[in-house]
Length: 163
Image: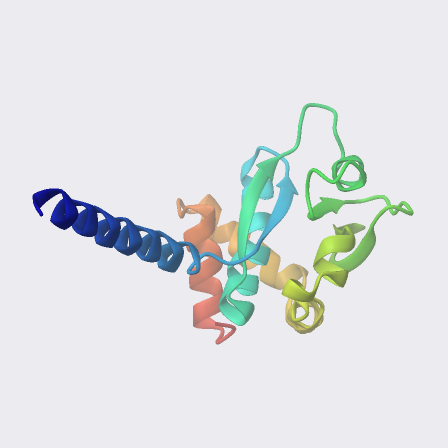
C-alpha cells in the first residue's frame, strides 16, 4: 500500500515537472543571429536592429561577434548568422536595410523565407523609412556622451515614437 502511494506520488510529480518544463519552453520563440564587429559602432547597429525588431514582432536576437578577418557575408554564407552588416554586396546575401555611406544590413535565407519570420521583411521596410544619417548621428552622440549603446538606441526610439 505504501509502495503504491509512493509510485502514484512520483508519477504525479513527474507529470507536473514535465508540464512545467514544457510551459516554460513555450515562452521562448525563434531567435535571429546578427553578426557584428566587436566595437561600439557594431553594438549600436546591433541594438538598432534588435530592439526595433523585438518591439515590432516579438522576435529576439542574439549578438554574434564576427571572427577576426571574417565578413558578415562570409558568416551568412556559412550559415553562422542570419543578418550582418557589410559595405560590399555579394550574391550570398540580400540587402534588407540601407544605413547610408554604403553600409547595408544583409540577410541570409532564414529571416526572409522561414515561416517563423514572416513579419521581419515588413519591419525592415518600416525601419528603412525612418532611419537616416542624422538619426544615426544623434544616437552616436548619445554614446559619446556616456550612454551605453543599448540605452542610447532605446532612448532615441522612444523619444521619436518608434517604439
